[in-house]
Image (cartoon, rainbow, N blue to C red; front, side, top):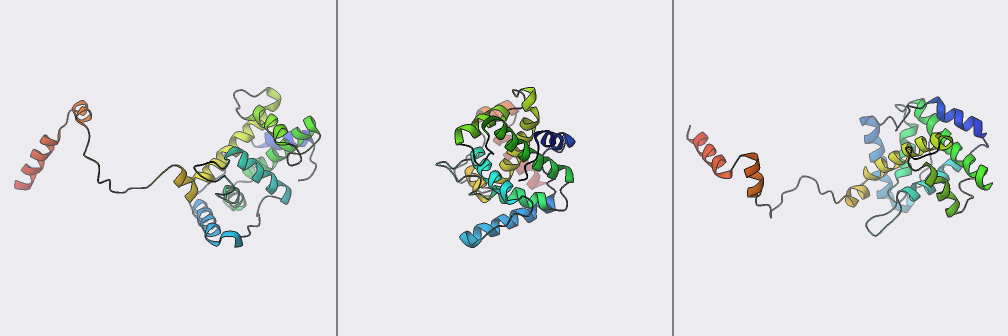
Length: 215
């Protein structure tokens, strides 16, 4: 990442205050999902080359993503799910607005400059404690100080992007324990308390079904 000034980083962030999350159109989402699935199938041989992020930004994004969604006993991390690849692919898509690209790049520049301002190191060069000190100040926009608001708004969008990418992956579905529309052989219908509250009963339904079959 170029050594962009703190003032310029704030200008980039303020230029597109409503850029929000990525412009995730349905066709782009489908292409990104297929791309990530292919990377998982190819395994270690799948060497992804960022299409939007610079080499420095790419390393920062990957570290930041795993801070947001770390690996735990239930599932892998954001980078294990290839959430950064998903986001990079979406940013490079022609359907994505230039405002979203500028916002992303400006936010990463703001983060590096805030780190340098406090610790004289960029995000990658800082310790985990130093990184989290800055992230704690921008984790929640409604609690952020005025001087951190631009960074807090960006980080909120970045976190949403990574979260959406993670839960769009097979790993994310498994983390949610989502099994889809499958038959449950152990289901015995709604409990009597629920049908009573709704004012219906299985007896009435069976009687109505029998009458309709006779008609």
